[in-house]
Amino acid sequence: MADMMGAGIGNWILWWIFLGIAMVVAAGVAAARVQGTGRTIGLPPVPSADSLAVREARDTLRHRYANGEISREEYLQGKVELES
Image 1 (cartoon, rainbow, N blue to C red):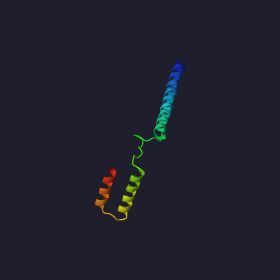
Image 2 (image 1 turned 90 degrees about the vertical axis):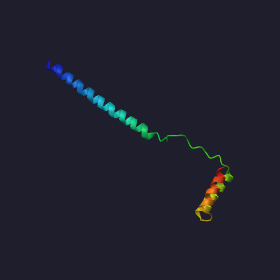
Image 3 (image 1 turned 30 degrees about the horizontal axis):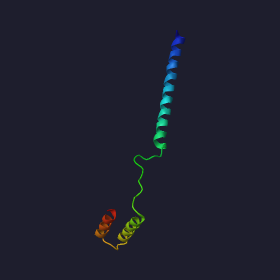
Image 4 (image 1 turned 90 degrees about the horizontal axis):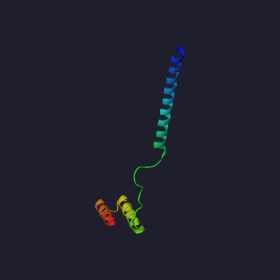
C-alpha cells in the first residue's frame, strides 16, 4: 500500500512540473509574438497627393520662415493657401 501512495505523489509532482514548463513555454511564445512582429498598429501611411510644385512651394515657405524672411502670419497664410 505504501508503494501505491508514493507512486501517486510522484505522478502529481511530475504533472505539476509539466504544467509549469508548459506555462513558461506559452508565456515565452506569447512574448515573442508580441515583440517580434515589428509591425505597427494602424493604417499604413498614405503618400501625399500633392504635386511636385506644391511640395517645393511648401519647402520654400518653411525655409523662408525658418530664416526669418517672412513673419508667422505670412507663413500661416501661405500654408493655408497651399493646402487648398
